Amino acid sequence: MNGQAAVPRVLKAGEGALLLEFDTAHEVAQAHGRLRAAAVEGVIELVPAARTIFVAYHPGIASPDDLTRAIFAAAPGSAPAAASASAPTEIPVVYDGPDLHEVAAATGLSVEEVVERHAAPLYVVAFCGFAPGFGYLDGLDPLLRLPRRGTPRTRVPAGSVAIADEFAGVYPGASPGGWHLLGSTDAVLWDVERVPPALLAPGTRVRFRPQPAPEVSPSR
Image 1 (cartoon, rainbow, N blue to C red):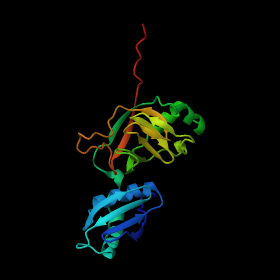
Image 2 (cartoon, helix red, strand yellow; image 1 turned 135 degrees about the vertical axis):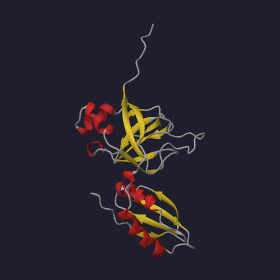
Image 3 (tube, rainbow, N blue to C red; image 1 turned 180 degrees about the vertical axis):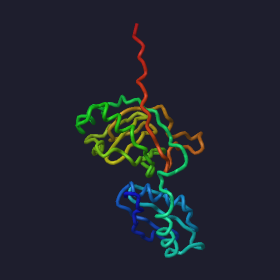
């Protein structure tokens, strides 16, 4: 967006709700951060998705027209999501994924370049979904953007660090999945004993930190 706020399409979504439509997940992430920072009067909740933000509001405080004007006025002047003052959440990664060499071949990069390009960006959680604790991370290097695997796996281990289309992500638990697996982490993405349970929430900034592979003791 080159520093400029995207102009959303605003749709009514029932009493006390609006739906803001955008063209890209990047626009969603940026607008969500700006709207959170603006704290628009009357807004109860903001729920980002791949191309939309669901806005729940209190009808007794704001009308749809008032809220629409406030949203358009607030978004351009407020801090974008990536300008959060909080430190990024670091996720240590051992780049030992079963698809690492296949991704390198598909992108024309070396394995080392794939690792470097995956770990370099400052990501922002655009939205969450698929499974509890799964964040869709905006900011993936364009050279690493590949479609999902033609044949999904029936089981992807918890902690798998993966990419698909325009997103990076980490599987919080073992599940089926069709993303390309680049590595693994011991970070706990979802813990019901933790407050909040999810390590990553919309707007969270994330950095991947490469780690050396653990040494394997020789068998006797």
